[in-house]
Image: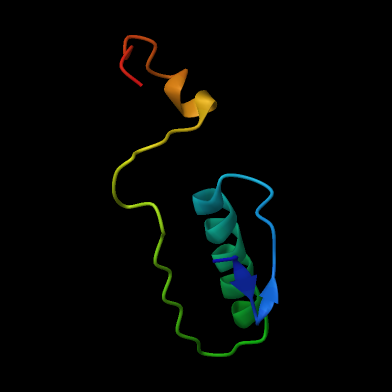
Length: 67
């Protein structure tokens, strides 16, 4: 199933959790700039196994050897 935004297929350019967070931040800023109330429900798609961390995050914990 493709990832869609407003009914149009999009390709994620980075780790999807980060991309969704950035889009949510943009949405909040835009609503704030317009002084409009809003409701935002952001459900991440990666809450369960298999867990995958970005290399930059894993680099913070070099003692973890079991990826």
